[in-house]
Structure formats: structure tokens, C-alpha cells
Image (tube, rainbow, N blue to C red; front, side):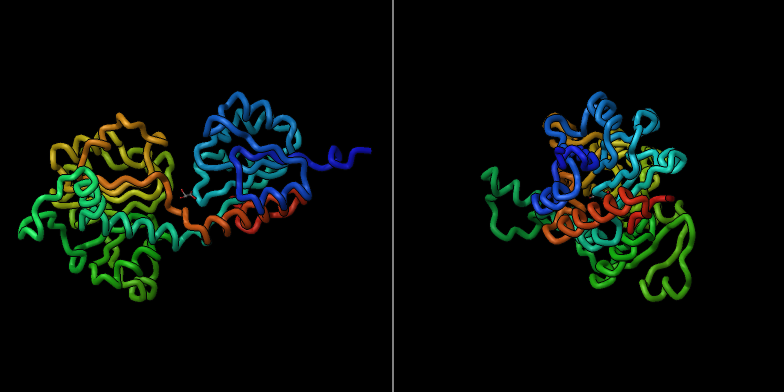
Length: 327
Ligand code: DGY
């Protein structure tokens, strides 16, 4: 009897850390997708029919049509805090567990957000480009490459969840003024500890010097930031997005940056990733770009892999994942 064939089947839509693959192989028959990322729907649809567990990543579309094809699927374990790529309601209806990886990536994502903020205000990446392009001519000129102080600026945090709150701590240490908008206002005690003031969405947009987006991508937040919003922002304001690209209407953001309706942007996420060399952002100096690396630190990514595996194992055994969406 081939024992390997008796093991349950787990499919990974991208490869994972070596230690994780080794662990997974001990328990399951595993197959890792290689090639186009995110995985083409045709391949996902054919694989989903025969597997017991799925490890997936942002932008893999695990929609109703895919879920409907699954015959034995017990668990979907995503290597991310975001789960907007999975129809979690439908999975729940079908009694398929969904695991995700919050908490472990909070610090890393807040750090990356803050580094984009520092970079765009102090023009670090722009300076790097100037040097590499051989354009650094003047030494210590009074008006050269001047950026802006963080101290005293108003940071508007949209979404005071784990990452928003951790960003607030970082910003407080830099003596920034903190305002926030959230679906639900947090308790006064928490506001005091964090040093944040609740404002309406309208006030957040009009009063912030920097707006940082920390809401999930949903029907309600899709293209939430468009020309109408950019027109209301201060001309000197910046927008930072480390959440999901589709929350910002990119075409409108390009217009706003070109026409100097706002001062700049720091972006880790995009409507379609990766962005091409021809994307209008590439030519704009007032935008700092990162290749979706919010959670990408060695320590954090290792923890994410561990949680992804634990979530999968629990789901495979009919148990609720450590971090579970709905079921
Ligand atoms: C996630 O985990 O959803 C983030 O996008 C990673 O940076």
C-alpha cells in the first residue's frame, strides 16, 4: 500500500518557506503551483475539485464558483491578514473553514506604513534617485531637497484596528497630532492611551496633513478615495496606502498628483499588482512606491507561515483555526 497516496491533499497557490513545506509534506500530499501569479482561475478550478486543504495568498480569487467545485475541501488557509480575495460567507455556508494571519503582522505593517510616511515627507527615495542618476550637483543648498517635519503635522488614521492603533503609537513618538475615523468610535480610555481624537470622515479628509488608510477592501470602501475626495484634501496633504489598492481610484490619484491637488503619496498596494514599468506612477516624483511588502520582514513572514500551517492543520481536523473568519 502506498502510504503517500493515503495522505490528504493540500494545494498551495504559491510556494511557502522551506521549513513549512517540509512540515506540510510530513502530513499531507502537497502540490505547489508554479508559474503565473496569482494562479489562473482555470488551474484553481481544476485543482479545487480534488483537494482537502488549500493554502492561498492575496489576489487568488477564491469565489463562489471556485468553492462550488470543491468536493472534499475542509479548510482555506490564507497567508495574509486580508481575506477580501475569499468569499468567506459562502465558504461558511459550505462549512469550509477559513484561517488568516492577523496580529503577527501588525508591527511590520505599521513600520512599513511609517517608513513610507517618513520617506515621502523627507524625500529619501527621491534623493536616492537623484544620486543614482548623477544629478546631485549642489552640496547643502538652502533650498535643495527640502522635505517636511513630521512633528506637529496632523496624521489622519482611517480605520483604528490593530494596524491603525500601532501606527498611532509610532506617530505619537514623533510628536504628531493624531485624528482618526472608524466605523465605531473606540472607548475614551483607549483614545486617551493612544492620544487620538475621533473625527467624522469629512473632517479626517479636510484636516489631515497625512491620511493613512487602514480599512479592508469591501464594497463600501472600493474606490473610496477618488477625485471628489482628493479635491477636499489640503493641497499640501499626503495619502499613504498599505491596505488594498482598490480602495483608491488610481486614475484619479494620478490626476490629483499631476495637478498638485495633493502633495504626494506613499503606496505599498495597487489596483493590479505588480504594476508595469509604464504605469503613470513611475514617472511621478511625488510618490513613493513599495512592492506590497507591508508584512515582509523575516521574523513576521516566518510567523505568518507558522500560523498558516496551524490554521490549516486545525481545519483539516475539523477544528476552528486559531484565527478564523466566521466559522
Ligand atoms: C496582508 O496580509 O493582507 C497584507 O496585504 C500583507 O502585506
